[in-house]
Image (cartoon, rainbow, N blue to C red):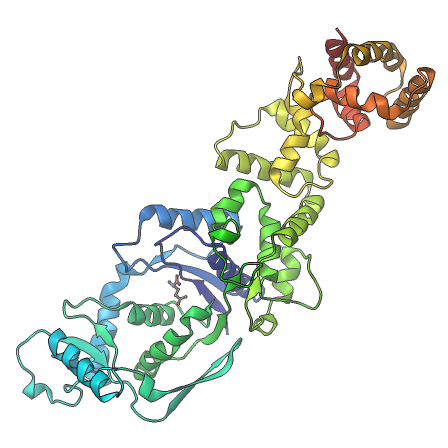
Length: 464
Ligand code: GLU
């Protein structure tokens, strides 16, 4: 059996980080099994679905590297097929026409409330022969089981049992002939050949309603896995109060996509004690067994930590690519060719302790800036007249030094000693002259990346 999973977002808002995790779980499950990962846009709520939200979802998934198979499927466009299935159920006698008016239904509920009985509507039309039907507006309802229980097996929740008297004869087609969402989900999952439904546990109750349609149509049922929501660090449902909740916000802050994938995978799923892993490992390890039953807590520190580890192992060219994407996504100027070259040369000394793209960019300032370097306020303090004098005395020593780390180190240390000071005292002014910043790679790394000519020119600029 080929595994087919799907992500079925409603384009009524941007891509939430919890939805991104749902997409990731489905993606990992399919990709780890040579299966298919499909995307279905559930746009039946016309009033709230927008093209901008649809695009934001596609962009978010693309940024996260969660590629889907084939074209995204639009749910609203499949309405005719949903209607066809409702008509089939009608023909099969698993659904019926209900002519009750909204007033009659409300009257039923009022009586039920007064009698303290169930307010789930029991239509008087359920068993009325078509010959006795009036010529009046109607809805099509499913014939829900009235007695007994339904037990659904869920890979995360275990066996979940509902008493059938909790199920109502839900509407499949409204009086204007339009299909309801619950029907659309089942028909689409069936037609798309979905074998595993992995989604938020806020849909668990829907599973029982959807199950009636599978039974009525005699269709194979998908494996179910309803995953717990994501909580904030305080154990309350993750919200803006805790920090960013939209995938796009993390992209705009410059979190690396590989780190996000790793962290989101760990949010509610575990593989032993492994915290840090590659995509390949995640695809290999991911299984529904590893998903926990209780809500995971979003831990911003852990996310940063994992992201830092991913930056450290990402190869330089790929990282440069990601930086370019980040700059484009945030509307910043693109890197020039020479800035890109410089970035690539410097990358080895930028990665340490970097957790997000802006950390790399900030440290790369020394290769991005061109002469004359304008020191920022902090760096300018290191370029007082005395320091400038020292830099100008150091310059001839560097002119003749061979340009490798050991020699540069020895030269600077020896020079500092000759001035009866420590090399540490030189570092601030050097940093200010070379980078114009207090945050930069080590002065030797900068010298090596910039090369002799550029280094000396910057020192001369600063000491002039
Ligand atoms: N459209 C639903 C949502 O965004 C998902 C439905 C499903 O996965 O079955 O919550």
